[in-house]
Length: 231
Image 1 (cartoon, rainbow, N blue to C red):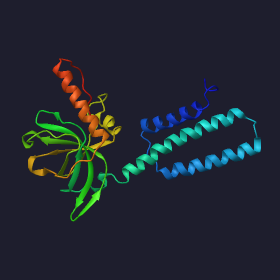
Image 2 (spheres, rainbow, N blue to C red):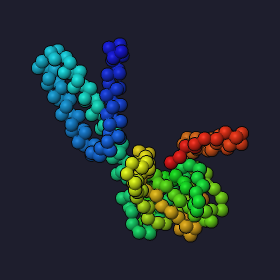
Image 3 (cartoon, one colour):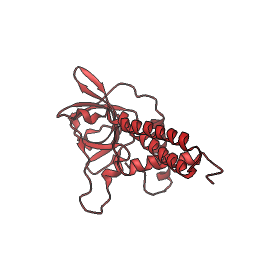
């Protein structure tokens, strides 16, 4: 199969590199991957020029390992761009934040949980663009109406890092959310947040969330039940 589809020889190691990087939680600066990739490529060129087509199996193995390395480097570069401007760099007591609602709220006993995206850190008079997801728990009594994806709020508070499981062998909700790029949460009372009048941006993600919500309502109307997608 690999001989008939040579492109798979590159795609499979590349995907293994991506999955391995995410699964094992490797955190390396992309510069190390770039230097390693350059050195590996140079060694491969020297090897091919010196031995020509001898040890063909070794060259194939070397190329596979090289593409695993490339896959890991791509994820590393994405992580670097993400964390380099992540809102966690500005965590201080009593900060103001601007957040965009990413999904419809989920009813809890004393609050409504929202997935939100931190767009900016407000350091008066400056507004510093940031990025990163967060779980917002808004006090139920503080909500005049439910938010829809794309709406924005400004709030004051200090996000708290998610905690891992207390009991050994329990489901690791922290790790599950970390794979989705969510590391912090915050509980907001009524007078710690306010809505913004700025219009939301047209987003395919917001449209998908609204469409999904309508579909769930239709399914519930016709008596269809099951476990809904959660975050």
